[in-house]
Image (cartoon, rainbow, N blue to C red):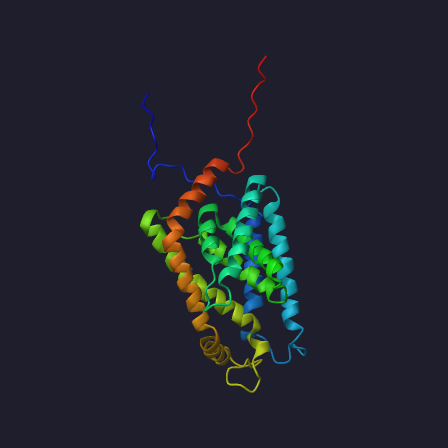
Length: 277
């Protein structure tokens, strides 16, 4: 008996692991806006806005914690099932285990390529949650908990979110697209994380320091100089790591993740058969 098999182009696309409801979309957009404010406030803050500079990062970190909690609660309300939670737990554990393997060595960080591929296959909402949970799990393992953690979680969540929103493509084109995005994500993550600590870690008398109330162009120029002097080389290592990992194991991971998504049949209703007499 001849069996008909679907070609790769005819295979049904796996259903997204997490669905954004009508109310979830605005919540995510609001969270993204608040996150941008938390990262970019040095370019808009007025003189004297923070009399105690040691308090500011904690305030913004607390805000991000609340925002992430609200987004996760909104997404979990009918938009994620037990199979998606199980997949989220497995990939978070894998990412948390991979991160310490490269951190501290020339910018080599092996956590982001998995996040990018998972966000691509399982959808933007899943990528957003995975970015948060992976960095949280990694911090619990390594003891890296502090005011920087919510910023890391939010920046990683954006990486996973955007990966799920990339244009449709398959085969080598898709791998090349993900590799290019891996480069951009590597630099963007470092740019944002450095920005969150820049106003509090540089000598105020330095030409690279943050100047409260100064024009946007001045502070942006100072930050670009600071970023180039402190983080550009490290972020280049992260970008190269993303490209190499995606090119080497990306095709196999894409196929594996998509096969798992088809078999999991996320959010499918259970079917019960009548008992045999």
